[in-house]
Image (cartoon, rainbow over all chains, first blue to last red):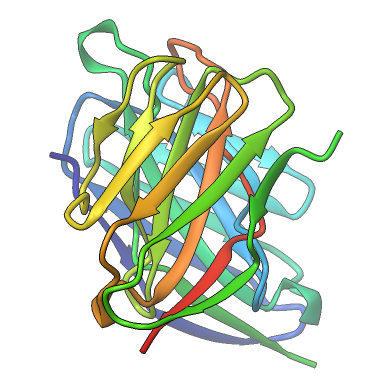
Length: 116
Length: 114
């Protein structure tokens, strides 16, 4: 099955700096890669996703890049703010065989702390 | 639109007790999922239901059963709770789509087993 590795496990930055979180996946059939943000005691919430037919996607201060050859994808947050502090999870999903069950395999999470 | 609703929000059980966690979605989604979240281990899939009438095992199904009651509801049952099942349980749902659609999560059920 799919295996997703996420690094780093913790990341501490100063307000205004950029933050980068990296994930690798094992299943070359994976074609959908969402990122979730989870604040303490809350539900995971989708912040951005990318499909395998594109290499990069941007939404304001957040961007995701995908390298299918190397099987890795990254989350980039620019001009970080204290409210960006949370746990971030990457995930990967495969529709191999034409099924669309959308099972996600999650990385272990990155605790991002943005210091004012 | 409430999205994905889970009940209860908190529960404490004794070892050996049984319990059903409830999940309902009002987004007309076909697929539903149950995850557990433990510190440092991300979210792990317990069971999923691709569509009404079907259920399949995920990564960590042992000790759990599920029922897809109808398109809206997907319940998770612990027949004989064990301390190792202490966790936060999240239900999620998504539209079907070939190329991947995001999953939407409920607020979670925090379950402690003594």
